Length: 69
Image 1 (cartoon, rainbow, N blue to C red):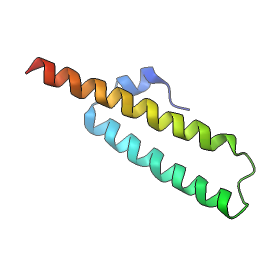
Image 2: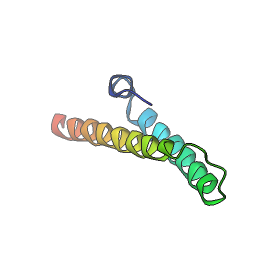
Image 3: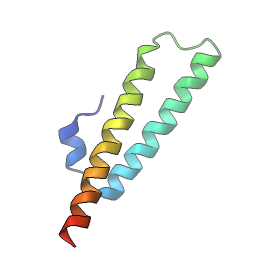
């Protein structure tokens, strides 16, 4: 689980890379679930929420840079 405070320390490029990594991890978990290999299905929910958290912080940072211009 990623904390919001650690995500806020990253820059826009770092957040985009983090989102991409989380999406790859979520895809892998979905494939494991489809093939009945995933024992803890709660990890799907956790990664989905981590992606949403990272996207929210990314949108906030982009909004701040737009407001600064």
